[in-house]
Length: 281
Image 1 (cartoon, rainbow, N blue to C red):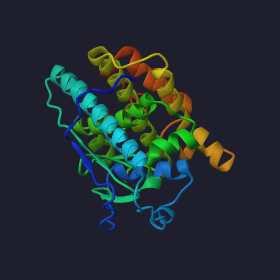
Image 2 (image 1 turned 90 degrees about the vertical axis):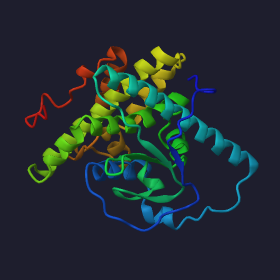
Image 3 (image 1 turned 120 degrees about the vertical axis):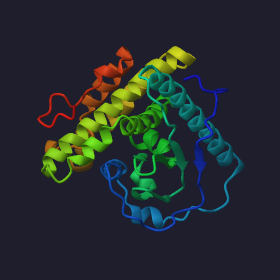
Image 4 (image 1 turned 180 degrees about the vertical axis):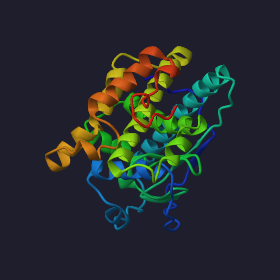
């Protein structure tokens, strides 16, 4: 992926080293998103809180962190450029989200966040939260490596922001209390698959506008989508799958919707809800 020298977004908030500022219970679809990657990494928040790695960094570590921050800022800038253009074409205004970098644990508008939580978008404060250690976890535990795999993760979370701006998040929240847990899980899957689709749409236009994609990049993104499918994660963590508990979609579904977004670049083809009994449109 070509990213060095790209415009860095000014909407990155670097809270690394600050730590959490109290526990707040949040609501909205962000609370659904927060839970899923706990078992992905096989960790829990208490382990993270009890692990104090606040010692001095080596120069090499600092350089790696600075490079990762620049990478995140450039990718976020690419999402801003693409979605501003696409919203303009829909006669809508794109409002840039902020991305918060944190270390170990933080507080979002949707509640508590830890490194074990993984990246997530909070619609309450319209921010993406990311501990950069997740990228290393992707490589070491999920065998999903490459800059474009990391860019896919950021673009997926920004996809949730796009859903927020298009009113989809509010429609989903309105169904809470009306659906069973199984039905709500199924609805959450459709939300997540649409975010994968929107990440694919972003990749389509980011390459068209910036020429950022190199050979193997799309395969890296698809590998990452495959690695975080509910069926694969459950099989790895407990040895069997429980489809009714899926909240993000199978590996095949996640790859399909990302690829569809990338191949078509047509936001109108991303209605993952239309086949559901609770069609949101």
